[in-house]
Amino acid sequence: MGTVRRTNKEYMLLIISFGGALAIFPFSVVRFIQGEWLVGVVDLTLVVGMVVLGAFVYVTHKIKLVSLALTIFVLSGMTLLIHLKGPELIYWAYPTLIGVYFILAPRQAMYLTLLTILAITPALINKIEMITFITIVMTLVVNNIFVYLFASRMHKHAKELSFLVRRDPLTGVGNRRALDEKLEELIALNKRTNQSTSLIILDVDHFKNVNDTYGHAIGDQVLFKLTDSLKSRIRETDSLYRYGGEEFVVVLIGARLGDAKDIAEELRLGIESNKLIDDEKVVTISLGVAEFAQGETGSSCLERCDQALYRAKESGRNKVCAADNEACKNAIQSTDSNVTMLYR
Image 1 (tube, rainbow, N blue to C red):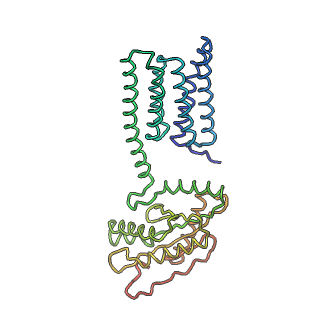
Image 2 (cartoon, rainbow, N blue to C red):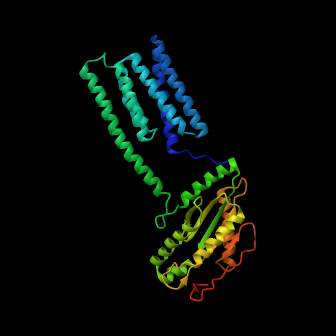
Image 3 (cartoon, helix red, strand yellow):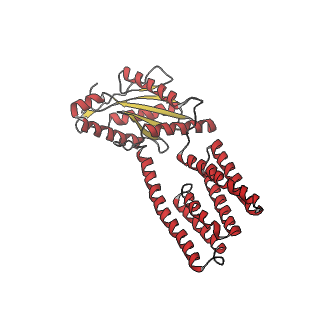
């Protein structure tokens, strides 16, 4: 069994949960030694709660609800401590409010931190000089605004980067990394629901000859037009990925092998009838099809699919071959007398 990879968000929650508990625990011990039982209990409750939530994330990898629960729990505890001990604990508000932006989305974090500042003010207003009170509140608000602006920009950049690292720069479809993540997601879904999923892997026939004859610029143009043609023919629930070079993979959610073969044949005919080069030549594709078996890994299904593609190419190209059947489907030849086959 492979090790489940943790996300950056998981690591951040674990650091804040266990790190925060470790930082607060000595203070709870001191409170009990000094006889401040109520404050000590609040500190200890924060420690236990953060450890429990951190352990939950560590075991289950679930972060969505835990992120909000941890934030509300910590902010409430901090607010209560400031009300109990007074302005001397206000310094903890600054790192705590900043830490919220490492857990939640910027807008959600902003709302909760502003509510916390409002909740803190009654504990300060009659216990310190007015100028000090105004200074503390204003610095908390300004600190919050700056952190929100910074976090918003970083959140936007992170989303853009996440999108780019999962996209093929030429065609704009998902890349190998995005495909691997999709397959992991589908395997987990298949275990829970037994939903059928099939794969199509396709390869442009004699693509090297296209590059050698017309140049790499035309070759790139062929791949770009091919991608548009494929996207226009697959279902909304399906997804397309560039597997490498001139190979592409289509993930068909909810499709049995028979349905996948029909879709593959439709893709084959669509590419055959589409002029991907601006003269009368025709570019064709060969396709391999496989359906996920129960308990099968993504790499195993891709390998079976690739073997089917190999059989399609070995039997003459411009064909569809299924992984569970040695016999490839006969290609339907175009009857258009104005179209000649390229590199057949």
